[in-house]
Length: 293
Image (tube, rainbow, N blue to C red; front, side, top):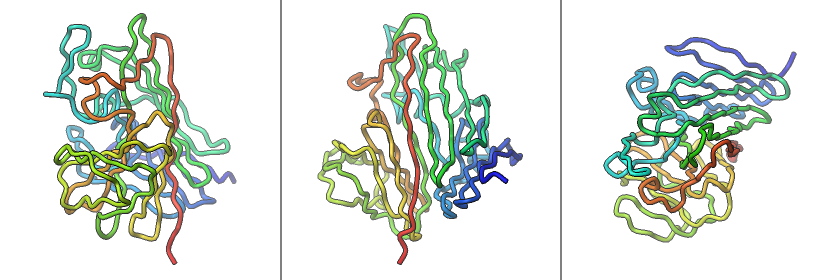
């Protein structure tokens, strides 16, 4: 019997379950709720936080799992931007997390994986006037979750601007004064918009807004989750920033690789510009290790 299995069941929505029995790992994917991963158990430890009520409510933004951020990360100035003389309105984090994605295929061949696809439609074009295609493969193998991404500009003429990212909610135990293993030396505190030195940890508990790690050269970050496990994210250099956020009195911390900082569609200093007919590929891996004594 194969150690890899892909199955599906219904829990308000259709959920695809990826299983690797040899590592006691399981990943849960809900394509119709923004292509989101809602569960990520690796090496027997559930890493994600999920507010089930927000997941079940189709009008709510999901608090939990790993929402997909595209074509923007964070907000826009007054929720709008200007492109080629036209003004467009777009909600925080873009359009992908609120759309139903199609199933392109599943595999149990040397991994448990599902490939999903999202294409521009009339509703997305109203706020983002570019014909895009996103193809994501969530693959569970060796006790790790790989998110293989393809971003395509399937329009005829114009370069497609975007800055994508992820918003994983990691369950934590204990306090939020967490030591993040990163080579970043500074961070911008969005509570007062002041750039501060990063000295090894930041306490999220008193913060309302997030903070963003700056000038990291190493494309990875890890941190303890308080339950004897160290979580690690590894990602392509395209993801230049990691934004970290939480809500007071909620047992999670979001550690979010982004391609650019908030408001980038307004600033236009670090936009990714994808020419018509071209594609960009990227990967992000979530893994963990047991660090208990």
